[in-house]
Image (cartoon, rainbow, N blue to C red; front, side, top):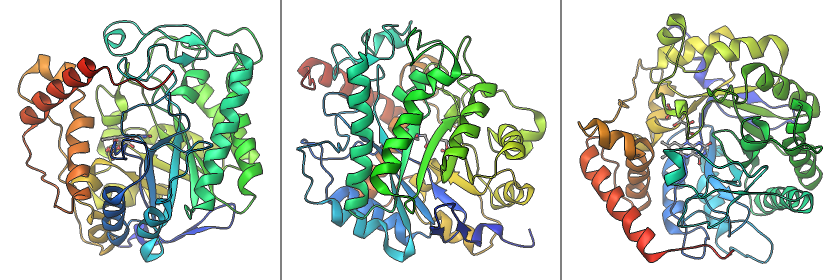
Length: 413
Ligand SMILES: Cc1cc2nc3c(=O)[nH]c(=O)nc-3n(C[C@H](O)[C@H](O)[C@H](O)COP(=O)(O)O)c2cc1C
């Protein structure tokens, strides 16, 4: 490695400048207060990350409706819900000239059973087994509800800007509501919100326009999008490219590329089918980015699989992406970016997790639970524990899910 491209700044189409090429991708902290506000733990976590050298910090998903949560301790931005501590969160996360963006999300039907009795989705299409054990069958949104949700996304962008966040990202990936609209497997509507890809992307396109109206032309807006859903009958690579092209023309400032859903969780590396050349370059969706780069100039953030300074520099050198997205590496080492920026040939300690028991690995979302524990430790002011036992985490998760189910902690419906 001769030149450390990670240290270069990046100017976005809206004019904002990110001080280097490392972005922390969203990781749901599930750490808010019981009434879904931010708190001291989040401030501590983001203080540590901001001091750790990463140029762009994207928060874990912030929800737009307290009756539709992905996890019980999600932070919510919605009308009538005043979070008086938000400016402490943004003060911590914007130190050191760091960009801090919110990731705005609605889970749609990916809201666990114990939180949503009847979740909403573009269509009343239920998950099949094994996910049907986790999520209740949804009902289809009415058109009036769709317009209401678009307003909610835009309102959350306004709250972000008013409270000192320096940008916003729409969560359009991983099977949540925007992704459900995009997928013909989950969206079988026959009105203007379903059918052709032009109709299926109307929801995200209206969200983008409504957000832009709220925040103005100089505020960074971004989307996290799947390169594909990796499912039969799902959102394809070609459709994803169409969405990227359209949103780029509309003025999107940064497009983050990921892939997969709960049905095919390739975003954390499970069963990703990649070319050998891609494997060598670490990142799961690099070949997709190479194709996207040929059709759009919008800055691209690529997330999933990056572990070494060399691999990251190589991806930047080819021009296929402009920002390296990191998630798990920054959960076990919040100062990893400082090491990368020093130009050392550093490598992340992230390795695949296993309890040693295949059936347990299959029923517990270990990659999420184990790393969430790491975030909680940082939020308590402790150091993460990269050697924490996966078995202990899996058993703790089963216990907690059982207890939550028992208590029937439901969001008001
Ligand atoms: C604990 C945890 C929580 C996550 N939460 C989110 C989230 O809220 N929004 C999102 O877009 N992706 C989320 N992800 C996915 C990551 O942003 C990222 O796409 C994935 O971990 C691959 O990147 P990595 O190989 O650098 O970890 C989460 C991942 C983990 C491990």
